[in-house]
Image (cartoon, rainbow, N blue to C red; front, top):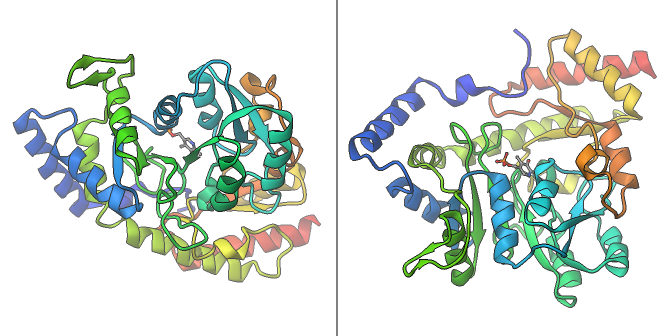
Length: 371
Ligand SMILES: *Cc1c(COP(=O)(O)O)cnc(C)c1O
């Protein structure tokens, strides 16, 4: 048996399946398939957990970003700052609302949107909004980004798809900043549905009402007062998510313990680790390391694979290198280097300490032979 990136068997064990069946049976009996009581219960609990006044479930994490942009009035003709390291959806959501992505380069130590790069880009472009991404679970420097953006009237949407369970520098949960903060509950994320789902958390009631309107065809008590989307979250998915809220905190703690162990075992190994200040604050959605270059990265991946250890290229290319995004401007150099040398090691909550020891052992053996 090898070491995999994810473990759905333990996550969805027999006892969990029994609880899910009970909830599903109830929903089928009620015939309450869309926006049911579990949606409301989850939204209440999730908002509280993330330190926000409101939460709105939507169909997926990409819609969450798109709807957040729409609520802020971002549309055709607007420029939106996006970091060069993220999942494709961050930039895709900008294009979906008709706006233009402008790339902000990343901090080479973390892969997060770089403050200095944003300063330069702000000087050269007319940004209407930015989308800092809490990549791998590390919090983007929201406090300083907010200070920079506030005086220039640049709106902020935080992409927290990988940061359910993460905290800002001040120890408050990601979601409590006052910005529109979006989450994904795709099956591989820290908090996951049995399919697609996502959410937006928000402090302002008027904005929350807007989101609820957008996700349901622009419907309001007085009719369809704007043109929205169909981005509702199924009751079945909300029932699963609500159930998982009971255990996700403990599972995130296990990820954190594994990250500490990795950091200990790799302390004297010449690879780039996530900066230690994120150890207690990250959700540890992924455990990225940085190698010397792309050649070494791919050789390591092959070595691990030959020893039954899975790893992943998040991300094989930086966003500005992806075909549909190549024409868009901005600063790109560090993002490209970061994508070229980054490899993600397994860190799911059911990984055993001995497995982390084995992975680190193979990593060291590889580097000794390769370098
Ligand atoms: C997963 C992810 C998304 C998109 O979420 P979906 O639910 O798949 O639409 C957006 N941004 C980041 C950083 C992600 O990891």
